[in-house]
Amino acid sequence: MNKKVLLTSVAVLNTLAAVAAPTVASAATDTTSVPENSEQVSNTNQNNSDTDVISGSDVTKADTTVAHTAVVQSAASTKAVVQATSSGVTSAQQQAFLAEAVPMAQQAASKYNLYTSVMLAQAILESAWGTSTLATQGHNLFGIKGDYNGAYVSMPTSEWSASAGWYTIYANFRQYPSYYESFLDNGNKLRNGVAWNSSYYSGTWKENAASYKDATAWLQGRYATAPNYASSLNSLITRYNLTQYDGNAETNSGADNSADTGTVHVNVTPYATLQDNNGKAVKNRALSPNSDWYFNKTKTDANGVVWYHVATTEWVSASQVSVK
Image (tube, rainbow, N blue to C red; front, side):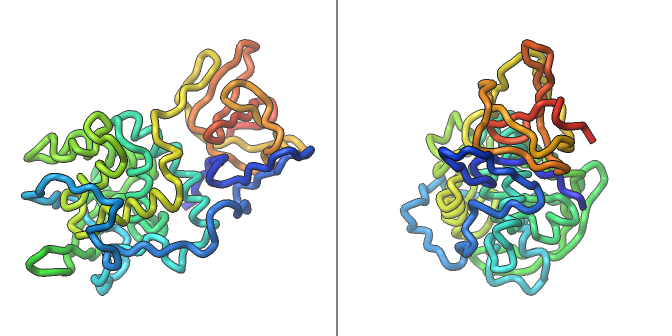
């Protein structure tokens, strides 16, 4: 699977102040920002009395259409729901995942009026930073069962109940063409609920949740049967500062904005320069020559120049790149 990478200026690149030359970013090799020694988050090692957890209402029936995707790699993995930042996941993998996932999560969260931070934390927790078997084989980040336009992957997974504890089941999981459809599907589920209750996840909606903690508390027992699901999500949101991505997807300046997506290839040397959302030159970052960058929208400025959105707040001119 050839993953397209979107540069995220906060999560992937160091912000270097007061330097004469920009930092040249390479999509394949940049390894800054995310700590090398990642904190392990395990639902079995946290207490529900954690002050980060805000109790939701009593749950009478859990959503059986989702399961934990990170543990489907082995039927024997029944001791924990997931260890989202396991020792096998490198900082480079974490950065690459955030670079690809952030703009997709922002778009889905904006469409359904949800917290981007919660969607990202769920994706990290459920897919172990996109390294789980289900994520790599099916682009399924949230453990949603069933099929997607007839496509699915089947594998064992773990469930938990108060009466039986941990037990293993075999299930079919939706197989998506990309992460974007997975984020949209998750957003649709949270907004439109389940067959027997369209408001089942109403506590995660921004109009009903005063903070991301209210939203994660509502997910516990509904989206996941793990007893400490909310505290695990909260730990990830805090550690990786995922709240920086909350809010609606940014609005581009300039005319004739579009939602085109694709990949651009840098074809200038020594590097391609960038502009911010306000059209001002970015002086401390640039894109390395012969590198590829995912873009999730375009715009045309007053002079008729097309720009590609390749970072949370950064754009590259069509004069410096070619669309692949």
